[in-house]
Image 1: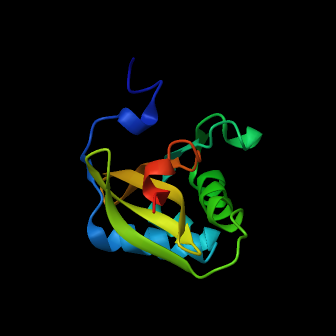
Image 2: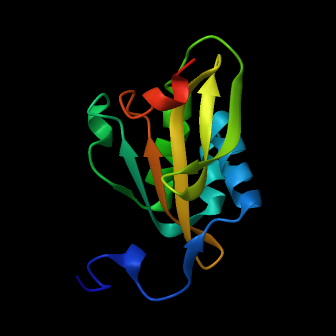
Length: 137
C-alpha cells in the first residue's frame, strides 16, 4: 500500500510516544477535554477503537484531529460509573501505554505512535472481553 493511500504511514519519524505526552493524553481523556487532546494530535491523526462492537460508531478508524479528539474524549466520558477516575502507565502488548480506570475497574487500554512531535495513531481497547485480565482480583 502506498503512502498516499495511508497517510499515517508516510515517511518520517514514527516512534513510541514519550511518557510526558502519554500522561497529557491520559489526563485530557479523563477530563474529556477534546480541545486539549486535539493539541497533541497531528492533523491527519487516526484513532482506532476496539469496543468489541459495543459502540457502533467506533467500528472503523476515525481520521482527522477534530474527529479523533472527540472520539477519545467520548471514550473516557462514556464510562459514567461511580468512583474516582485514574490513569496509570502500563505495557500494552509490549508497547508503552496507559490504562484508564474508574472505581478501580479498567475501562480502556491506550497506546499511541508519533510522527514528528505529535500523535499520529492512537489505539484504544475498551472491549470488556479484552480487558478482563486487567480487572481480575
